[in-house]
Length: 555
Image: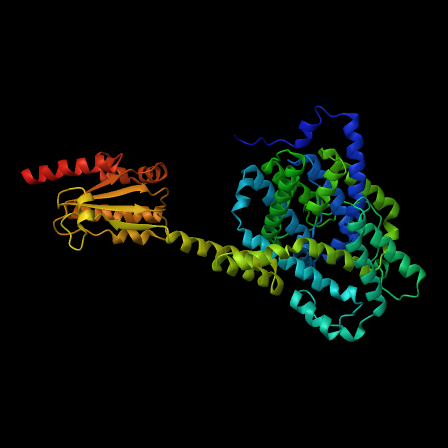
């Protein structure tokens, strides 16, 4: 059944009640409280100002909830984008980030319109696990500086993760005990709070505790206000000057952002479906993600996608329609206007502690270890390589090489499933009597080969294993186990057919399945071999071969 391209909001508003609005209102307010410190922390980890994280949650959160294909998905800045955004900002500035994010949004819209929602599942689990764990490690490394109060030596590059490790090691002598005290206390709160209650967000308690410690204790710790200029202005439209060179440079990052946004949002939707017993519209969600990212970039935000933790909080607190996500965005807008100046009081070690917990929750270390122990060696190679490349280089390189390696290993694995074998004949030597008795009597001039598995470019050479002897006048190829055929293998079959024609050998094909048959018809192979030489099953093929053999004897 074809999925509808229709925002879920339009469906849910039909029977919407005041009672449900109250539930959505409560859920939206609670999610906004949870999103506030996370949005600020993720913005700082992304190398932009704290208010830009709020802009993202407001603009993208509202647009994606209003246009999305999920009942309860909450969108905003997530940890998955932190390292790639920080790299773009460091290299190309905010204009480069805007262009990359807008292009990513366009790609997402196109993916949704062309109904690519279902294709996301073809990205191997080992790659998503590898780069997710890699992102978690890069976030932790990036926050060591603030957690320990270390100052990077002036002039050292700190864009790549490896560079941050080197700068941290070089500046370790500036270690600040006060920063560690605040960071450790906030981290302890974040770990303990969920075990005490899930009604109050641990991140909010950690932020309040961090502010009180710095305000009332003799602790010398950097706050957001010490390092960044805080703005409570409304997000405004910002369209950068764009040229072809900028677009060309931004495309690799745009594709990475789009893929990440698609994976994260659809994964969040799947989790949400299980929690509320509904079914999301994946293609509608992709279009909404694209529109949300375009709007976020143009209004000063960073890339956004569905956030599993915030979505789960929405469901747990009664949110059941997209209205809750829209309320969460409106509440954040009010917080921006009223409370944003006080965000400057938040200590940097508190932000680092929050991001440590974000990294821990996203790293899936148990899954990573389980795959290392149980997965085939080829999958482990993809997993580890993607993880290492994400940490040592960046996400673009990791996804590109990870996907390439996964595809090559898949081709190798599939090639092992394809084979060609000749039938045994009663006159052959070295056959057991019982086996010889089971063989069907056919003329010596008939040769039968059976092909098994998909015929594609990686295994097209198996066609060359089909050989004919001097007495062979009729060649039967049994294809009941060939479920797919590509043009490379088709060309190999065409070459075989032409060779048979030159040597006056009749080629008969048995049990050609639907997809291979379609390729053969389109390539003109059916006309070349003769439609009469395509038989429904092996019995019909042998019967035709015997008839042709008799005609040859008579001639």
